[in-house]
Length: 326
Image (cartoon, rainbow, N blue to C red; front, top):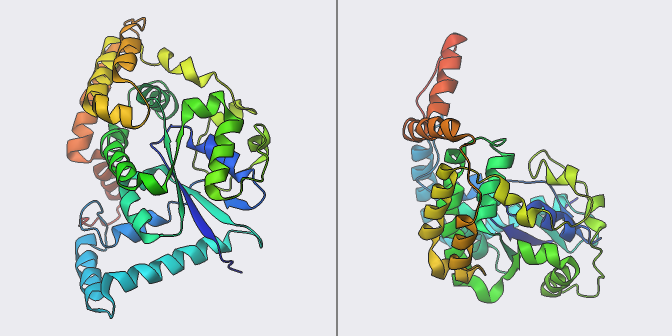
């Protein structure tokens, strides 16, 4: 049975500590959550022309849906109202009677953050930021298993950051901000601040309570949920181990420069301080040849969408008919 529920969204880049924050929030007895629903992405992309390719032809579907919505009484506003009711109903199905919030933590929501905020005028929104160097290092360590695979996540580092930053500045008067480093150092203080924003400040946060929260679903942090049973400061310096060679340091330096001093300051970090930390790293030739080869492969993969080609070749090998994606 569906219940009336208020959506609560955590917006961040992947590898920013969002699973830890999610579990800490969900330790509250009146907040439900799931690992990573990804529910909103296909719904929002229905009316986005770019960014989706499918056997059914996303271009044609987008044209048809755009015309349909434009011609319905009330237009896009009415459509968004029904979409909001649908999503809130789905979230409500996931909650218990008496729950106040359903927490949706899906990092790729950075691609649709503006649409989500506009769609849910009564929802709550938490922006989580982390040292960009630590985000790079954690991506290499977790998703790449120590090897260079950043090409898969450039959409997060660049388009994702830009989208999050712009939305944060636009809506900062109605959102809540958490910096990962502050949360690790003062979990009780940061959780209390957050619950005050949610209007449930009478709850006494337990810094160890998150360890009892089990998330339904396979997506999320595959390492932190196993390694840590309490909030630990170890990740604050762990990032230095992964940025170990000249290629990684140069890429990271260019990324900091791309973000720039002002945008870093907006989210609570200092460009000069991070650049100094990067320069002070002990650098070796470890993985240098591997990184060079993988960067070349990543460039080719990005230009040619080799994952799609690989999937089609597998189908041909299995004597299965293939079709174009549009």
